[in-house]
Image 1 (tube, rainbow, N blue to C red):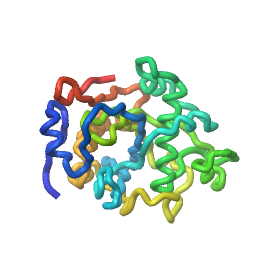
Image 2: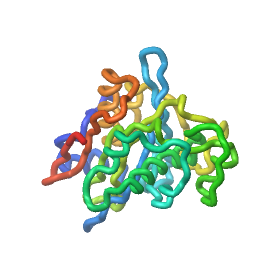
Image 3: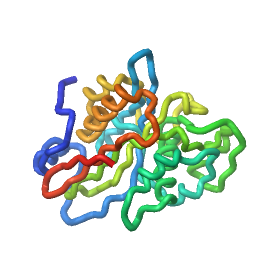
Length: 253
């Protein structure tokens, strides 16, 4: 493992293309970013925090072989899944944000997609024990294992939009939860094989693994926030990364 830059802020598109040339397929023409969500699951061990990460299979066209958090594209239908507890009002407000497409249903779908992807990719069901039924195949595992999905423990950590010039572009919301929020841990993992070699690593070690540049940046942001707010108080500052005038910018939501 080698030491690498911990921030994409200020990078030009050309500089980022060099850093990410093995991670993202480049393509021409404007492409509208699709909503996506990822979950950073935290485990506190003494004064140290560990995060759950998995390695993407080399056969994937998108970030092959990279260590990532569970996550993926948001399914708008996720907004209709019943939950035992909704988002904390301060977190919902930040997730809704601003703009013509900003709605509470969209925020709910984004949050639930992070919960669903964590089950599918890592076999971890976030919620509370209790009867749950659904007609959605993607959520059947929660019904099978008696877990009611819950959103009240999720915290909005960061947002990042994939720069132009990629075949795939995402408007990704990085959410966080604690290991104690997991109701069921399936020993054989989730129903998909998106991730392999799922491990718990310290944040410091995670930044030194083979992770995308934006992931390393957000891990640094998270480390800073946890140093002053180890319980992740609702409504905390959320860094937002995006490309403007050919340079990566960082705002606070």
